[in-house]
Amino acid sequence: MWLTFPSTLLSTCVTISLLLLLYSKRWNIAFCIYGVIQRTIEKKVRKTYQYDVYISYEGEIVIWIKDVLAPRLETEWGLTMCIKDRDFLIGESLLNTEAECIKNSRYIIFLITPEFKSSRDCLFELDRAKYEKVTKNLDKIIVITKDIIVTDIPYEFSYIWNYAYVVQWPKDQEDLNDTWRRLKMLLTDGQVQNKHVAQ
Image (cartoon, rainbow, N blue to C red; front, side, top):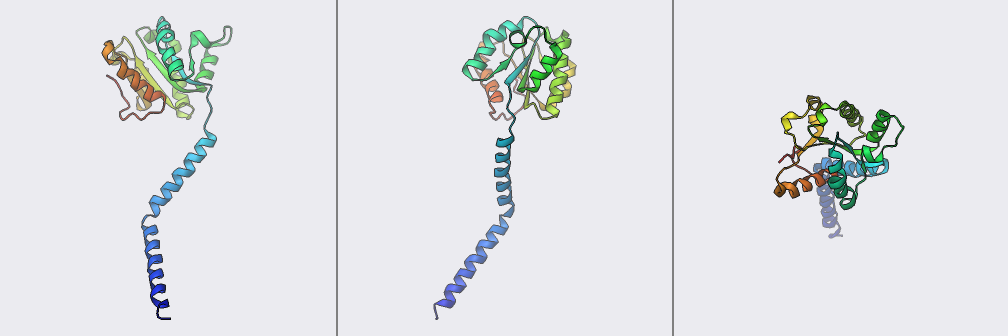
């Protein structure tokens, strides 16, 4: 009989302490549960894309894309790319095909070169990318500048700077590995601390 009171008192104290601890950590517990539920829902409703990357470009840079960029992204990193000169069917409406391919891509890369500045087609792709980003169809907009300085980027791109990632392609071969690594982080959901990853 005399042991019952202390054991009851002890179990009551432990229960109260546990309840106080749970109460003090209630927000942490709620956020953890919310995070688990959100991740579970995202996995179930995650959109499946036809392409990982849609690439917007103009002119002869397509040779560099096919010889340098595509082998790295597709063969080494296992991504699927949409390249106009390779993947578009002849006879279909160019604007409709571009819009549909951008909609069905996880990311878009704007490869800005001196030839890009005079292209009306690329500006349509920019408008479409803005729309898809706002409607949450597009995960990332990446701007690669090649043979052009950042200040020469068309002013129309100012509308996307809040959610675009900029990579300056280096002329110096020594910086190339670092640029590839940064681009891979952007395209494979790696965490990049600063969105503007220019050299």
